[in-house]
Length: 397
Ligand SMILES: NC(=O)c1ccc[n+]([C@@H]2O[C@H](COP(=O)([O-])OP(=O)(O)OC[C@H]3O[C@@H](n4cnc5c(N)ncnc54)[C@H](OP(=O)(O)O)[C@@H]3O)[C@@H](O)[C@H]2O)c1
Ligand SMILES: [Zn+2]
Image (tube, rainbow, N blue to C red; front, side):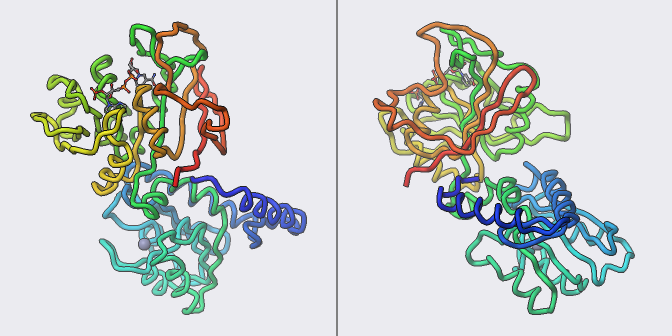
């Protein structure tokens, strides 16, 4: 999720504190609207269901839905894959023959009101006549925003919006960015030692983190549409850049390799493992890459491929999320181009030293601390023996 402005944060904090202070027992307040604690619980459940679609439903958002009547959950569902039924449809299907009229529907995103690959969910809701629909967040698409809720209200259904909105936005940060900018949401990831190195002085980096952190990395790969590395990482590590999770639970991202200098070997593992997962090359000159699935010839910068042009191209190709896995030169040029939305840096409790050893962000760097890139919403999580530090960046205009 992009950072809120300091003004919005203080306004929000102010409203929340007033509401928390003023909220009668058993009620919770979100953005100035009161909800029952039970509403909160059902929406939390809907969010957990939504997250089951992570990776699978791209380029669509993750959405979850819970249908409740007289304190009993009649059905629940989530959007499982793009092109398949929406969460509301699955939740009503799960209700079977139960009488759903007069129920409360908890849904994490405003129900759609337009004909897409599937019929509008508002039509289904109007047929099934719920008494109330509780929505975590409005549709961020300005052409769609509020229309689904308006149709339901016109039919006399009570609609409450904003319950657990922050969590819902966080869940769909990739999709919201892509919807509003046409650009993929970019996450810069690295694994570094406590002394800030991503490889030894000889370029050896396998493995810096433990198996739990590496499993987390595979979950991140699963959740992203594409993964990017520089040509030196391919030359030194020869990675396959695939997702290694239990069979059937993994989605492989499209692999994108930067190769301005034409050093990428034809025999690189990314071209062969597995063959059905595409590998694209971003170059600055026309060259023959016999095993690449696509080659993009993009403008050059002193670093190599123009990273801003690359994310535009990836957006045009329908890539909604990009995981940059390094190395140091690639991350430096991504930060320099101002394309990074989020950082996920794993820190391993190891020291390897060496002034020649590569750091996560190489390049020239800034001269004054005033020009350091600020990271907000910093979070730290222990994963196995390692720590994952994540946070968001303000993008350059
Ligand atoms: N621990 C970790 O998380 C991690 C992750 C990845 C890699 N690594 C380690 O990092 C090391 C490699 O890092 P590195 O910094 O030497 O190289 P790198 O970032 O992997 O690759 C840099 C190369 O990519 C090409 N390139 C094209 N366009 C570029 C652009 N806009 N910006 C930057 N590079 C561009 C350039 O080569 P051409 O001129 O040939 O195009 C450049 O030399 C390896 O030792 C690897 O093991 C560690
Ligand atoms: Zn829908």
